[in-house]
Amino acid sequence: MRVDTVHQRDVYYINAVDKITQWEVVVCVPQISELYLLPALKRLLEQFPFVIFNFHSDRGSEFINYVVAKLLNKLLIEQTKSRSRHSNDNALVESKNGSVIRKNMGYMHINFKAAETISDFLRQWFNPYLNYHRPCMFVTESKKDGKGRETQIYGQTTTPYEKLKEVSRELKTSFLKKENSFSNLDKFAYRESDNQFARKMRQQETEIFSKIQTMKG
Image (cartoon, rainbow, N blue to C red):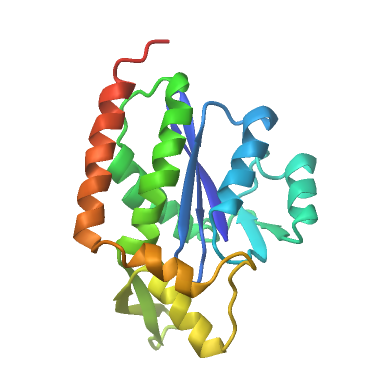
């Protein structure tokens, strides 16, 4: 799992993306401090339906500290960090910061009082939309030229949920947490079409932003 933060004036987004399936979970906090970060990370990890084995972030102190290490150790999750002067180590989540968070949440000023409201929207609507109803592109082939430069071919387009099922079938292993099953997740995933859910999510998004604009510092 790759993790990064995105700053939007008075709020911060914590963005986590699974490297294999591109399953993505976003949470919002008013500050990057122990008071808010630890509960937010717990909520974030709970929203992944499968077991997390690795937590990879940049070298920022918000994640590389004793409190976060203690939480991950308790959950038996290995923690790793990006190498110095290797800007591509966290490229996946950094690309999602722009194509997902900035594209949808924009750059407008958001009052810190709206953080909880935004987090509720992310949990109930935005994160399910990303994982069950929004297709991603996946690498199917890598080629190297004569100079050793690698080109990746994106030959598959599917949702993170379908990719999770595909990986589980191929490896003949269910990586789901013990309280989850594909039969139950299927009921949620296929209850509405991608377009139907997207329309409902956008309506909720419009209402949330209208509410945010009325909040004063």
